[in-house]
Image (cartoon, rainbow, N blue to C red; front, side, top):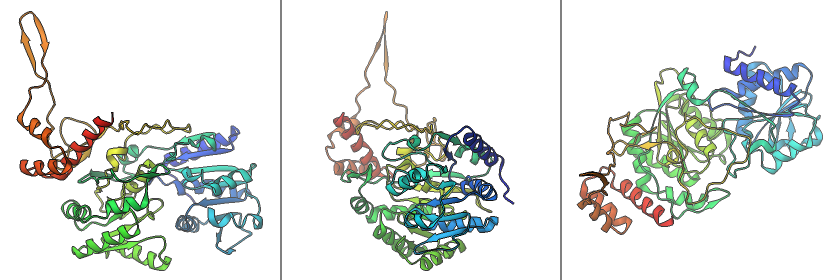
Length: 456
């Protein structure tokens, strides 16, 4: 018997109402950690009880395996479609990856219900083919982030969107863990181009595979979450291997995993991580979606991305509650939170296409970063982590008899000194002379601000 939380039961009721209102394709949006699989299993169980053929489709073999494990635990009879064979062709419920089932379409009965897990990938050709090949089938899409990187709205496929609770609400009720987020260093990505809306893999890996970046990650791990189990998100396979090697060299047990490894080898590494034998598990594009280990206490972001979906999926890995886990720690060395905001920010999801942001247009994400401890928080007078109060930039007002005259800010020697530093290297040197705790970070911020003004 499937036991649902109240918000899960409400979501299922709204989905059923949407189908009764003649919506063929319904999109269910629930944050990472809210239990989308468990919730949708109720729909699958009900469909099978009525004799309806149901397909549960994912974009990765690992996600299909996790769905199958959930169905076994809930007592839902099902078959699995794997490369070369179907485990039980007569089963009303079939679990498969898109890549495998698309080659078996002629050998399976047509579905009455199709569940697309992580359906923000639905624009891909094979997804689209299955969606349109069975027009009589109802469709249930599952995602934490109904947001495609190319700006296309999911309204091209879905006519109704059901919104579950927000991340903030789940943290407030204890269904997700509280967190602390730091952005200790942000990389220089000025030479990294984009492909399909996100950073180019090769150039990104080269930019992130630098000793000072990984060294900074090791130093902050020791200072902020020493001894805790952390998942590191790398910019590529070689970058991930280097991260694991450098953590090991620093005396911190770490391993690398990626999708090309034999499943037995990868599963064994994950199990060692679960048991706490490995403290840092580094990966490249493997654990962004569907990796469910509640014992993760920290996330180390070393893979910059322009994808809000990928960013929220990554930080969400650390937000699942577990016994003895007071809070999660997020070390955002990629600077993604400065672009996309905090995990529990309210977001206005829509089925419509998004308006593309101009290249030089600034983000409107309401976050502030403490210059002393690198804590990232919603704007307020003082840093909630260390209490530092950033200086308020105010202009001086001179009182003149009979009139009020605004006077421009009084020039200061340090501003003139800063203005004479006409290169990034000169700014870094100036920061060191002034005794700043993070002169490179400060210099990059000042330099990026100048480049933005010049571009405007």
